[in-house]
Length: 100
Image 1 (cartoon, rainbow, N blue to C red):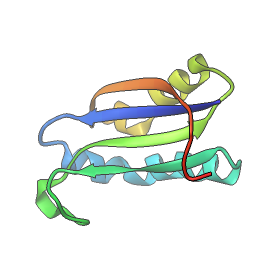
Image 2: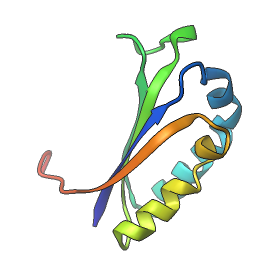
Image 3: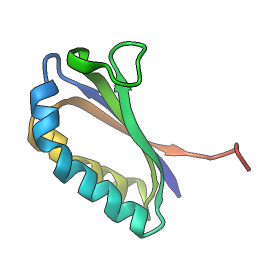
Image 4: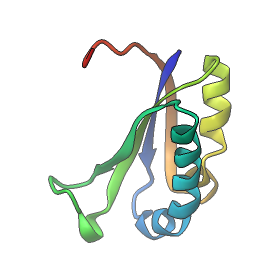
C-alpha cells in the first residue's frame, strides 16, 4: 500500500538540511530502485523553484510499504530526523486516484 510521509522542518534548519541531504537522497534512490517510490520532494518556503536562503518548510514522500508501521519505521530513520531538520513527521495511508 502507498503511504504519505509529511514532514515539517524546524525553523532555521537549512544548513542541517544541506549537510544531511546526500544521505537523505540515498535512501530515496534506494526506494526508487526498488520501484516503491511514487514521488518525493521538499516544500520551498517561498514561491520559487529554488528558494535560496529562505529554505524549505518540509518534505513529502509518497512510497509503497508493507504496512503503516513499516512506513513509520522508515520515516523515523530519515537522516533529516537524525540531523534535527524535521520538527515533526506524520505518516498516513495514501490512495492514488490520478493520474491513472
